[in-house]
Length: 99
Image (tube, rainbow, N blue to C red):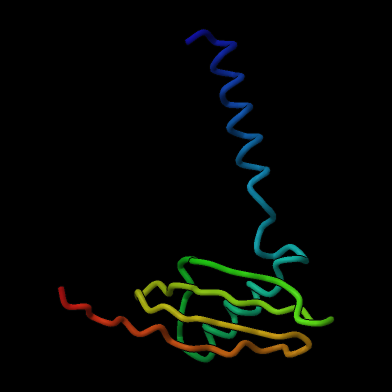
């Protein structure tokens, strides 16, 4: 690969990486910071990964549903309907299935 192709590839990769979305501390992701703090305080959970999230409107209120995984492997479902400031947390139970 020529030097100009390598530079072009790096620039494309950089553009893709920086357009992947805002960091968790941006204004529109403040709820994620709130959730991580609440989980740390109430459940001793250091969030390792946001597995899924949905944001929408219920009437004029914003709702948020999310599933996170802690560093220790536990998973929690969380939901919040604003103007509430705290999330409702539910631990996800693993159910063994028989074949």
